[in-house]
Length: 305
Image (tube, rainbow, N blue to C red):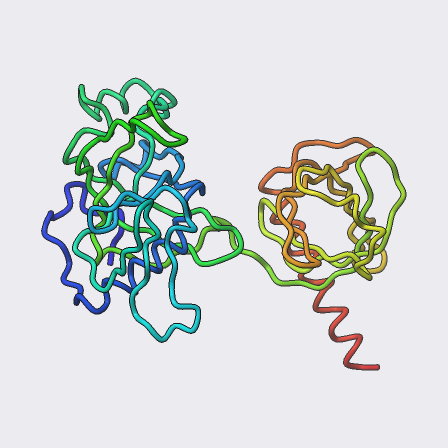
């Protein structure tokens, strides 16, 4: 199924059996978590690509604004789930309608160029009937994308978002599909490295586990309490050991994500002739080749021993 075409999508919903609606909605809720960021594209125009937040859901006419209001059977025996509303519990055994709520008054569209804003029309991106592509942004679990249509705009009169207007995006159930968040291919490797805070050179051993044109994943060796200085947004230096006779590669990175004992860091600069310069595509391509060769050489050496 082509997700971004045609420009003017057919309005009729793709048939999905009622039994599958419940599972589809639970899957959507697990990926589009309340409070989580979402990427959206208006009218399938790639130039109108923006980010927002999931504020809540409309489930069978019930507005939900807290993720703990949706309770599923932990043993996965019962197909439905329960909504914890202010005055009662509501068992959901079928899906009559399901919508995702995102703010429509924070002015994200002002980031678009004039021509793109003009193409959205006088009423803007959240006019009733507008078509949306929504993509979840979860770096450490499944991501899905789906198509939706603006049903209406709601002015919230109470709650933590009182005074804001949200767009109710009715989800087209048959459009839900998985997608890979990363837009760059990761190359799996296993290469020795050294890591240190950017402000000093107190290096400790590590391994680089994979690399793309924008980021790398590494693990301290061994993971220990001495690495508690590694946190999100920490700037670090990573010295990568290549094949014998090749100079060390020194990268300046910023940590963006922790997964257990592993960390993901964006590559910002590379050291050349004693100074750091911007990390460019040609550097990434050269580095991926060098690290892949080093990883293969290390593997062959280990097997021969």
